[in-house]
Amino acid sequence: MSGPFHINTPLVESVGMSRRLGTTVYLKMESSQPSGSFKIRGIGHLCQQMEMQSKGIVCSSGGNAGMAAAHVARKMGLPATIVVPSSSPPLVVQKLQDQGATVKITGEILYLQVWDEANTEALRLTETEGLTYVPPFDHPLLWEGHSTVITEIAASMGQKQKPGAVVVSVGGGGLLCGVAQGLRGVGWEDVPIVTMETVGADCFNAAVKAGTIVTLEAITSEAKCLGAKTVCRKAFQYSQSTEQAIISELVTDQQALHAVETFLDEERVLVELACGAALAAVYSGVIQRLQDEGRLPRPLGYLVVIVCGGSSINREQLANLQKKIPRPT
Picture (tube, one colour):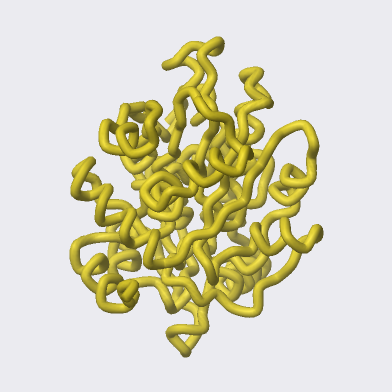
């Protein structure tokens, strides 16, 4: 396949979100990607640029990066081994197998296993099996691929009509790096980025507060696809730069789940909890609060929320989350 593996996703106005915020909100629908999330942009670009070994690729992922790697490998005619933490739902394992990937599950204790342990095993397989390692979020080619999400927005809206802010979820930081790079590439480096994480999967926010990269002791959030214990160094460097405003915010699992449910009702699209963190920037009043605090302007101009999507969600998984996450009293 000579062209890109990703598609140019819709940029649509959300009437419900716009009404809540009092300004126009556009949704960049990365949930429409062939693999279900934005990850295919970077991973597809990386796989096309790297010299792939005939033995195949290996990727560590709790879901979305693995789905993208498996999809790309299948299209390229390469075997794929995806190493997932044991916290990954059966839905993810089945989807990966449907793509033709070999799935290796790490860990014996369900609730303790997160991406970091899976990555250790993927790196081991790189050495012992001669597989080509595809990182899920920490590589310049990934960021270059992810930056196309901004290029598409600029092409749709016109470069002179720049957004007031862009909202992204952050796990390991790959999408953030791509968005920051993309904004600079189209001359929008003065557009603030609002990064959203859930409490308990907040390695970027912890690093911003500490002024240095930190490693979380554990991932306690149910948003497992945000579950990297340490953010990539490039994302942290962007947060320390004075050239571009990055505002790091947190929401609870309850707020992220409420956002997923509201988004399903209003936009008729089901996304995973990690994506709900970004949606909660509007649904839980984060953007409005930042305006009240003077950290974002009022009027804002239009807001872009990157709907990163997610492959680890269906009705059954949503019901499980609704049982696990207590409602506010």
